[in-house]
Length: 452
Image (cartoon, rainbow, N blue to C red; front, top):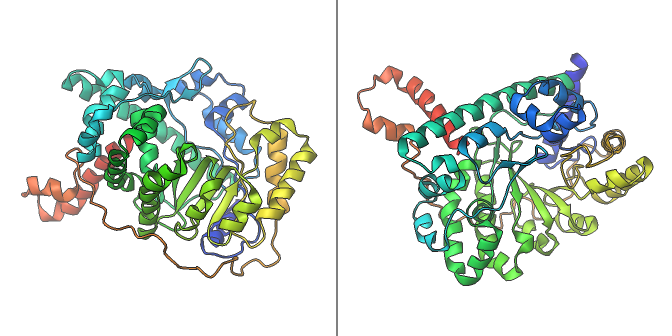
């Protein structure tokens, strides 16, 4: 156990050095593994196991044994039970047991003004019943369905959280500081992914771009509320998967996507929270824009030229990705290791780099598992720096802030109450009980918001 704790401390130091702008002892290693892979790798029935969770801990443990990752490799699970209770149209389990995200439009093109007035209230009142068939009913039934779905969601996530904690300690994985992780989307991605769909948002940007831009602006308070954890930290992480930008015209990116996206990232940084962006598809057109984001923003890329990414971003930000998961399926073990060496030679010099693949390991047929193991362990054993502890490469802009956040209106919604708002309606609470009641009530307020 002492050796495992020592390993965990060393792994933590690797990531802390990256965040502190130092050269770590070696390149930290990622390699995210989906719960679906864990289940398949253990030979369990995919759909049934996600429902019952029978033998899920053993399956997750077995997956941890094949990785050289320093980070806890198992990604968050999406339990099917609450989706079934809600009658979800946006998260549907397919015939093979994978939960899919069909494109569904739940906001009409003529509803932008109503959405802009208060995005959270619009979503609660109109979007959610359209997303979820069982919520499209009378208020009493809707309340019962929603309560059952919330209970199911936290029942399942609590089971996974307990297993995660055990495996992190068993194998000495690095863990992000307590209550310093979150998830968010860029404003335009949120509208495209959950409200208008890809086709809808593309048409909207052509027909009334001003309304789309206003909607992005109106969303910023909600997104900041969603993505800011209880304990912001530069060692923490708000994960932000980015989708729409590569499919936009550069002019639309500049006028509609970038303004609220960049200010959102800067606003998280101003709150002391680090953002980890996954740049889906090809972001090579936008590297000069990404440079201006807050220093030491984490950026993982799916596609692109490693040399150009390193040249443009590697002296200001922490970069990762670009190793094709498909290579693990088609290449020999030596070819896969040689590819890792090639990427190390480009990306590792000067620090500000950690190794990861371009995609997560989701299904059993995604890769040759022996190749996955060989590559992650090769990096962990062969990427030591000779100048560990010194300052990472810089370009003279250390500490410079390029983006002015400007004024962001505070988050307000009649469906979310702070303690002060609650107290104003219940002024007779005994003063000595106030801190106790405030903490308890706010926990449940945040839980319900998290489920949303």
